[in-house]
Image (cartoon, rainbow, N blue to C red; front, side):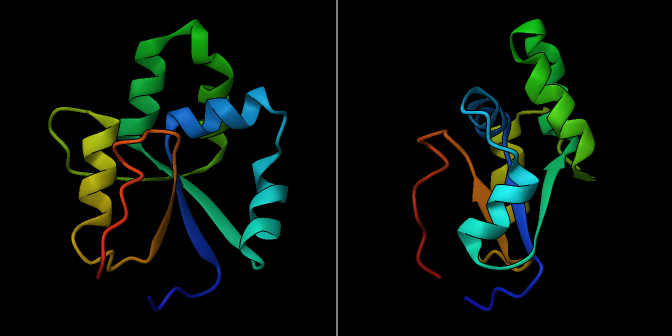
Length: 110
């Protein structure tokens, strides 16, 4: 798969909220799970979607603000579609995707 360190972990809002619910400090935990240095990232669409949801996910929104933000060229602002676009068919940027969204968790063979 050609993943290289530091691992770039693209986190969606559902994952950030789940991590918060389970009191996981992702910047400490992700390197343990992946056995190497990690850079958690989000996109501007993910941040925007969390803002739209509002107070219910305000903690996840605060976490997303602390992560590196990748600019995307999405027009509709859907976080799910944004992640699919960022990863693309071949995952050329070598992202790990961290999500609780079953539709995004479908594995693709390269």
